[in-house]
Image (tube, rainbow, N blue to C red; front, side):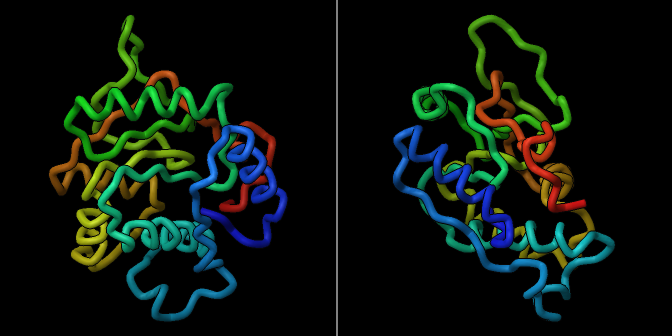
Length: 193
């Protein structure tokens, strides 16, 4: 997810992806808040234009209905050392599990109680959206949920918490996390607030 005026964020995430040896990625650069139409806004209530913009960028991923595991990153994600190797290890382990969404980014100091030799912890909510992984077929499920909801009145990370309570989804947090949120740790200024 990228807000196009924030050029430094895009440079940083491209540099991080290249350093990690990751070449297959796509930027979601539609729905910048300055370009939102009445049609874009009609389902949203009580959240900022910047939050609507970000939400719509996430929906754009869901609309693709990708039938493969999908890693979603926001443009202020800061990778841990050996990001690709750790991500590959996580993906291999996830192949042996039943899951829908794994929140692998660090946000708001939310962590699971860590147990020895355990990576994934079942949870009932998100841990922000700087990085999360969608299992095969979950994009379609999330897109169907967006279509079914007549009003969206919370930011994307809080929406994940809401739909967990209403729909049958299986969430996990990872420990350790694979990215931190650059706008939360002071590397970038927040574009939401």
